[in-house]
Length: 221
Image 1 (tube, rainbow, N blue to C red):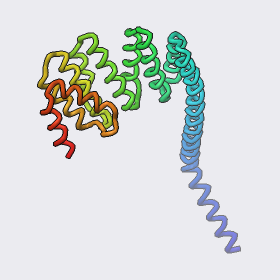
Image 2 (image 1 turned 30 degrees about the vertical axis):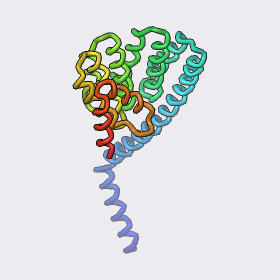
Image 3 (image 1 turned 180 degrees about the vertical axis):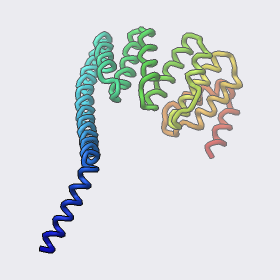
C-alpha cells in the first residue's frame, strides 16, 4: 500500500508538471523536429541542385569543345539563373567569358566576369575575374579602371599574377619605374617552375637589363 501511495504521488507530481510545462515541451519538440527536417530537406535540395548544375556544366563543356559560343552562352546563363548558389555558376560564367573572348564579344566577356565578381562566394574565382577584367581594361587603355580591379586583398597564390598585370598597365602608361617594381615583385612572388617567370624576366630585362636580373637573383637567395 505504501508503494502504491508513493507511486500515486509521483504520478500526480508528473501530471502537475506536465500541466504546467507540457505545452512548452511540445512546442520545443516541434521546433527541434522542424529544424531537423528543414536541415535534412535543405541538404537534399543542395545535392539535387548540384547534380543538375553538374549536368548543365557538362553540356557547356561539350559546347566549348565544339567551339559553339552561342550554345556555351545559353548553357552558362541557364546555370547562372537556375543554380546561382552552386560553384558551377561561377565556373560556367568564367568559361563563358573565355568562349566569348575567343569569339570577339567583349561585351559578353565583361558581363560574365562582372557576374562572378558580384555573385560568387569563391574568392579564387573573383580574383581570376578581376585579373581578366584588368587585362581587358589594359587593351582598352582604361588604365585607372584596370588598376582598380587589381586593388584590394587577394589570396597569396595570385600575388604574382596581380603584380605582373600591374606592371603591364604601368608600362602602357609609360611609367617605367613603377613597371619595373611591379615586374620585380611579380618575379619574386611567382614560383620557380611557373613558365610565366620567363616572360616576366623578359619584361624586366627590357626595362632594366642586368640590374633587374641582379635584383631578382638577390631576392631569391
